[in-house]
Image (cartoon, rainbow, N blue to C red; front, top):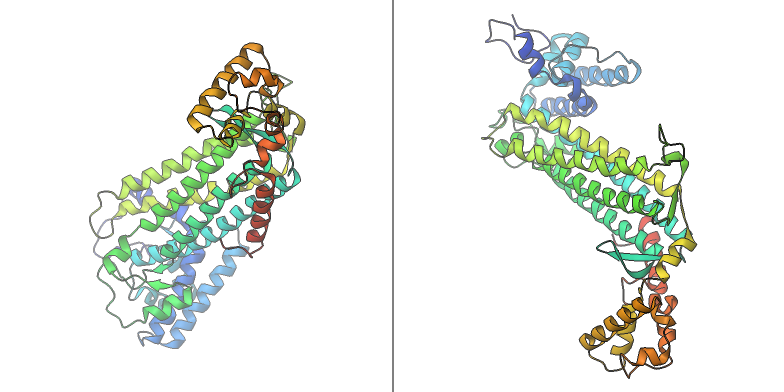
Length: 465
């Protein structure tokens, strides 16, 4: 009564109910693991042959059949039109159809449990590498834009209130740093992904003398799992990947939010390219930042997958449980969403124009040099708290007079502190305010230039990150 496309069925006398079969089957999504599973199957065949479990001729027949499957899948768009339970039973069914009963020996010494976990890790390893490359491309786009507007000035904000002037390039480099940490996190996650569970069997290990280290080396794994129970049931690596993607998407969402604000008429600091904007079906004048809004919205999608995975595994007993089938769609979508979001963000950055005059004007007014005035007094021996109080009163006076601090007369400024002298006006200029923030990591032009050079060297593979 068993289906030849199934990997089980001998002890059953009835076929699965059609509703259960639909509920149970995962082929519609896990066929993405096809190449990874075929590769791991080739390595397993070599492991079986090297252990003397099968002959070299049998292993070669298996590897030949599996290699042909990769070619056929690449060239035949209808290749996966099958009703298999999952990609693993699909591969075995195809292999048996191609080389006969020898193909039935491939599952010797392994279970779907360690087979799935191995293919999943192989696939995810490649996705992490791809996403890492896309992060670098976005960092490069941000860096190019920063260098292109190296002299542009804009307000920096706290509480979404104008706070102090900064260079636009300094703002760019903040996101460059966030993305660098995202790339480092995923690279670190890759180390824990790159552990081979094959050889763990269903849960207790394999009874065949297969050299797991040799199989792992063939597949490019750094090491093998140390415990068979953990090997088949561990999904920490998947949660860690989802978490890394969540943080990445949070950073992209923050970038999107900033740009959405800056391209609004209320701010007017940037203009988005038409190629990443859309119009209104009703209002002819509208130019909407849809690409950025989608970036912001898709962050919630990935965060949701992370929470879903944690919730799924939080109460699972050792070892494997079918609940773990739910990891694939979540991780597949995390990877897909992160990848397309990084591509979209890079296109947005490459197609924006900074409205230099508008941004500079916003950085000039609104008492953004108040902190510099306080620092000026501190340099003349006034305790900072006293200076802060004095400048606060000066700002209140200027607000009532509807003038900027630099527009007040020396006599007016001296009523708040007798330490004020003629050189205060030089200290309150936009250029002086920027230049004074010269500690490492500050927005002073000299420091930003150094940071841009360091970032360029790092992307070129010459830096420390």
